[in-house]
Amino acid sequence: QVQLQESGPGLVKPSQTLSVTCTVSGDSITTEYHAWTWIRQPPGKGLEYMGAIAYSGSTFYSPSHKSRASISRDTSKNQFTLQLSSLTPEDTAVYYCAREGGMGQYDFWGQGTQVTVSS
Image 1: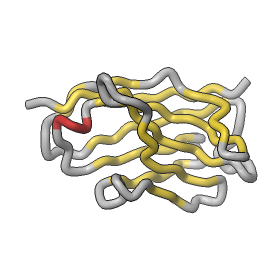
Image 2 (image 1 turned 180 degrees about the vertical axis):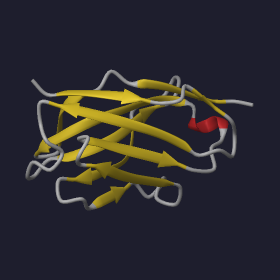
Image 3 (image 1 turned 120 degrees about the horizontal axis):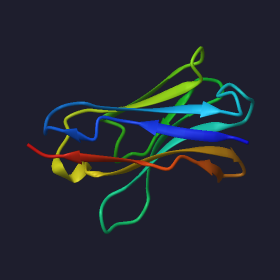
């Protein structure tokens, strides 16, 4: 069974850089044709795609986040990480990692980690 688990700081201050990591078990992040994705949900709003890192290591970002987001991976730990810079309170959200298993479907999700941006 594929499992994803997010870990993050919980509370960060404005202007700081957020780093959240997703640890994957039951699959390798280098398995062909899978992409490993970051999605967030601000309070009272819908899901928001942020970006992904493919099995090859290629990265993709939504236009809204491209200037501030960076996704990397550690294949030895089977983890991938989202960094988001220049935080504002509008970045407060539950951050989810998910696997895109093909055909644009997110078939496995982590439980999410709450990130609050506040001074």
